[in-house]
Image: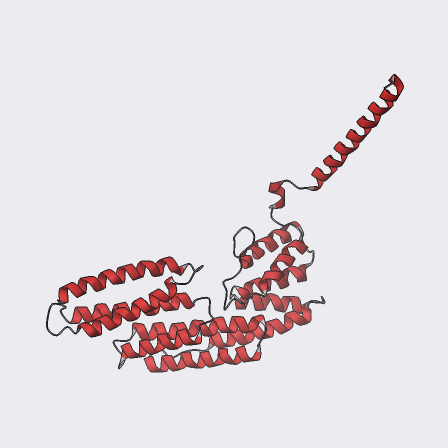
Length: 309
């Protein structure tokens, strides 16, 4: 190769290398550093976009979703909206208040949510009509909460709870297919669980109280089989059977003739069946707890079996 062609070749290669390095630098500049990618969203669109996507989840069947940091999305959104509002005073107030109300209602803070919805409805923004409708729905929720229940008589108390359940069921039917159906189901479920807890706490005062508790748990589990809390209800039901077994063992000496092992064994086996149902479920946090209860109950059964021989 002669000298001048070599010079031309050398500069051509140098130019190509320079272009490659510039392109590589440009590509690198478009990729944000890792810590920047996971920084808290400061733009309102980013906050609302992620929140709206997760806010429609069925909170009766599933727990409230988590954001990328593992925090409750409703609580995280409230913090981010507060931060945005501090940094951007007076900007997009109706959007901020509407989404804050939405997060609050999903957290069952209905009174605060309704108040914010009314503020949005009083403005002239596009969200006013929707906010007014949501406020009216939450007012119906609050009316059920405001109903007083007589506490002087256990049967009147249970009847009062039943009336609230019927009221929530009416809202479930009215808002079928909307997030308010899910919220109403959550409230209905809480009343159903409270009713069983009340009967269980007062079973000694009620005629055939133990049987009423068993019926209550059976109805709770049948009705709310789709609930996110079903595993907890199964464990609680099993715990009650264990309590019955322990009560029986306390009432009748396991080493004496009055102790009927078949009755005791029936209580224990019923508990083990419920615990086992939870222990066989993969991906539930109650699985490990159920396994521990199974071992403890088997140990209790073994001890009483030896004493009764």
